[in-house]
Image (cartoon, rainbow, N blue to C red; front, side, top):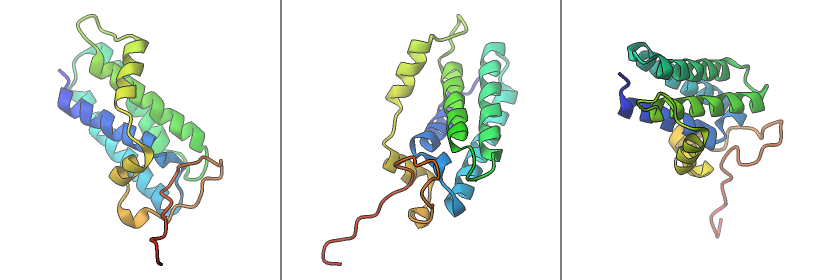
Length: 157
């Protein structure tokens, strides 16, 4: 049986990484993002091992695979692929969370559920990264916007 609060927490953490655009970070922030995903994947593995439902296990296994590949991908390369892997993991976790007695939730249900869980990128960033990393990530080579906080100088500075 899946621990629903734990699964919900894992989905929340994976969505924070996705919404923070964490997969587009580099340098120390990129290392932190990879470690964050590795922690989520490790926690997911424990949850997956304890689940006895084959349908949920299938979704959890896919989410685990995607998170581990995204975390292991070389930093600074394939950021779009890494981001898509985390997106797939989030969908798998949502499917596992919403799976009922019939076994599967519809894609519409999953998309609606994930849309309700959205977090603005700067708020998500602050929940994934410590404040000391707010300005250390170089802009992503792919040109993605919103991949790190842009600090505005205080008036009178």
